Structures are given as structure tokens and as C-alpha cells.
Image (cartoon, rainbow, N blue to C red):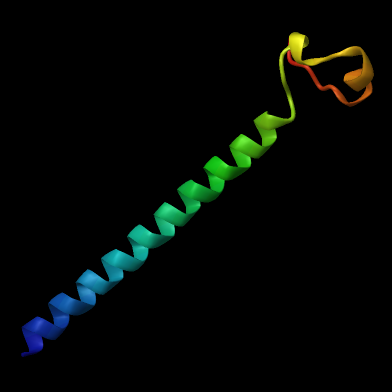
Length: 57
């Protein structure tokens, strides 16, 4: 019974570590997408939105 409890504890710790790594990856991907969504190409800039355009060259 002691071995079973130890295995369950190890599995639980591994699941927590996996969940934390997954959350960090999702957060980093969300921040990357958010950062890149504001910068478009030069064709995305029209005359009436040029003041808000942050085009990448």
C-alpha cells in the first residue's frame, strides 16, 4: 500500500509539472500572438488608419 501511495504521489507531481508547463506555453503563445497582431504589412495601412498603423518593414 505504501508503494501505491508513493506512485500516486509521483504521478500527481508529474501532472502538476505538466500542467504548469502547458499553461506557460499557452501564455507565451497568447502574448506572442497579441504582440504580432498589432503590426501588419504595408498594405494593411490605408489612408484613414495610417495614424494607427504599426507596419513591419
